[in-house]
Amino acid sequence: MQDVIRQKGEAAMNKERSDAIKQKIAFEIRDFIKRNSGAASSSGISTIWGVPLVGFADAAHPYILALKNIISPSHSIPTDVLDDASIILAYYVPFTKELAKTNSKNNRLASPEWALAYEQTNAMFGELNMHLVEYLISMGYKAAVSKETMTFDRNKLISNWSHRHFAYAAGLGTFGLNNMLVTKNGCCGRYFTIVTNLDAEPDKPMIEELCLYKKNGGCGICVRNCPIGALSLSGYDRQKCYSLLRENAEIYTGFGSSYADDTDGDGNVKNEGSEVCGKCVTASPCALWNIP
Image 1 (cartoon, rainbow, N blue to C red):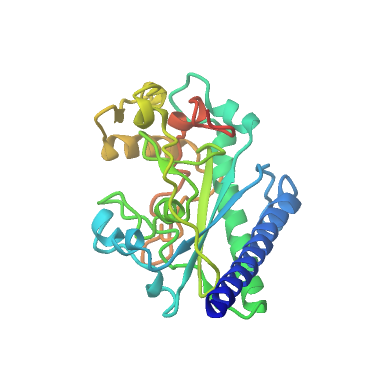
Image 2: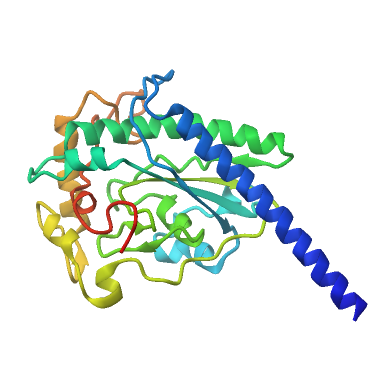
């Protein structure tokens, strides 16, 4: 009996310690974004973000280990980044309602504010992730960002490191009809992930379905919002969707290039411009905050 009591006590203490570490890291992320939101940084960032959500996925979770089957055999797994990876730190940064409204008008192309926010968020991620890696190292852990995070295969139209799938494993949300990960704070935002050997209790994938169409057959507004019919109730035309992203990129060439690997052997940009759209997420019930 005493052994049982002692084990329960140790388990409670370990959970309390784990929760404290996770809260500390989540605060660091939220504080960084709050301090930099709307401020003129070294990257010229002026975008304003909402309060981020933070999750901690088990690096050895069966879902994560199955990503080579779910997405592509070339998709990386956490141990490709760190040999002793234990946790995938995933966070979701929501855009503001004001930004979403600029992109929800009945126009074929994305708003310039949306394209700019996309590139400035990428720049912010670079600064924040460098800060987080250094922060985790200062706590005595190892941490790294996958080299595949900003790459994109333009033939298969997939990434070899899907932030959304890792965020799902971290319990941040469920996949909607539009293939976006819907969180309790919506899906109008961006995700990023860091690999670490943090000794914390991982979160579990969310069980509750947040997509209204998948939940009860209602909604489907994201399908109607797609300007070119790339979304349907029965599937998603990846090639058609990407054609509109490139159409936007040909217009928005002054904000940056969407992917870090977007250069040829001489370092010249191959596909300059911001590959954005967001029409399916900015004017639907799952778009922002307080999911019904």
